Image (cartoon, rainbow, N blue to C red; front, side, top):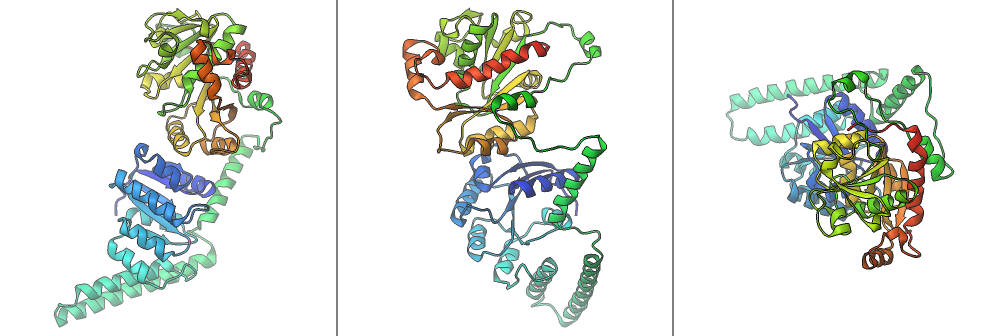
Length: 473
């Protein structure tokens, strides 16, 4: 059977998910993933996949939560096929999922890549799911999939041949014997493979195989990765900072405009709004303007013009200064291709939630990309998916509105998004309100909690400027 499925979304724990993604991508699939079904459900509107492969047993998530998440997924994306892989059989959970129209269920504590590809190619029906619930098969029985297949074939054959003539019944019996003989041959072959430890490999072997392959590649290149620890954010930042890829001179000669912008800091949150990007951008511009001349803030959010509205009350169409920025200048987005060239030492670009291909190109070229997120499940999932899709370099994570002990832990967010954690910014509503009333920068409000993390980010930018070339946009 020809595989027509191209896009697969994995909902598995971190370790298995990485191995499965690598194996499926080698088979030609486009793979995205979430750590658990709650993250998947929260951002289901942004998922574009033909099929979702879901780990049935997720630590810390109850059957009730799974059913509620699946209900939301089915209502939002009824066309998406959901395939559950359960380590053990939970009749109550299976019954609930089947009631929601999810019929693809496989009970397997261990499975091979070949098994997985077969599950992807062949969808199960209500009858298959019903047989699975009624059966007494357990995960410890050998050749589970072959026995399940035999049972389904026997049930179907019995129902279809009730009214057939005796001659046709004899032909069916002969056919069934042939099928059974073929199945026995498959079993014998499977046993032989198991004894010789060849061809078919279990998922746990897949993890080891990929890990060894990566290790061999690292050794071949003359180095081996070691787990690094960082005493503080200073050491951390200096370690992970990497210069952007230089543009070949041949490409530069073809460009009509060769002017360089200064050190470019892009501030964005994927396609998620209301994360505090604009507040952070204005605060960072105000801090850097105290230390450096020619600091520019670009309002690139053409859907809401957040920075322009906050600073001037209307959209900015020409460069303007405001005392809130402590001497920095606010520019419209059009200035990126015009007046900003060779006129600023540091350029901070505040992007909106609606990103154009041109915006993505600028993000890819920026010296530093501050990915601003909130410690919330839905927000993290939406931003993470956009980052994985676009592969933006020089990205560092900034967690805004952080309250210790509430929401997702910062390091868990960083691990989920696979980004270095640069800073956490405390939630300080009082300072935000005071700054708005007094029309001053939030970092200038007495006793505010923003100044320390903003100054650490700003100081690291100032340290890096002499070592970085300007960006050609």
